[in-house]
Length: 258
Ligand code: GLN
Image: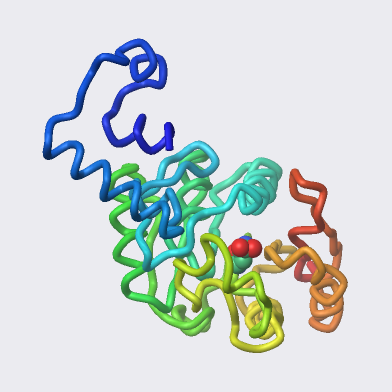
């Protein structure tokens, strides 16, 4: 609650503590009570505040987009390491961008990245575009609407493909608890085994990667073996499992053969 109070009234915690004689006027009190009842009803703090920090940027978020997670910063770091290694103008594709988090965090770190970010949802794309303007990254990040690779021209090939697709299985009980109850289900679950979007993204990588290009996808804590198999089945090489800061297998990367 202190966090909400701090953000809502734009006062640091120290000011809230030291000005304990400060009182709220009627309107401010009503406003505050509204915020408290939303939170008590379970609404995620990020939706109440309308923003969320991710990597080195802050993003506008609303119920039409997934709230960016700290573990997804792993994909940003994998992409940045690849761009640093290539050390040249790099074409990056972010599939299912939501708020634009991954695409914008990458562009924010390096002028070498030129990113196309896709999403099926027009609501998500509107928020992502707004974020690109606010962060002044609209010259580096372009947006395209459609389901995975369908948003692109067939001939369009990239040095790096990144995606955090919906990977929670249909009946997973996590979908009915905590923040997830308030987030768009299309960003969380594929309404199937959890692997169907990952399969589309991995199997399409060959057509949309340049030779030697890198793909990295986020997945559920227990899906890494299945994702490695999907990459092997598509004849990707140099396959690696990446751990998040909690020590869970959280992403797999692979390369198109040179
Ligand atoms: N990371 C989300 C979660 O575990 C799952 C959906 C996703 O990010 N692709 O809540």
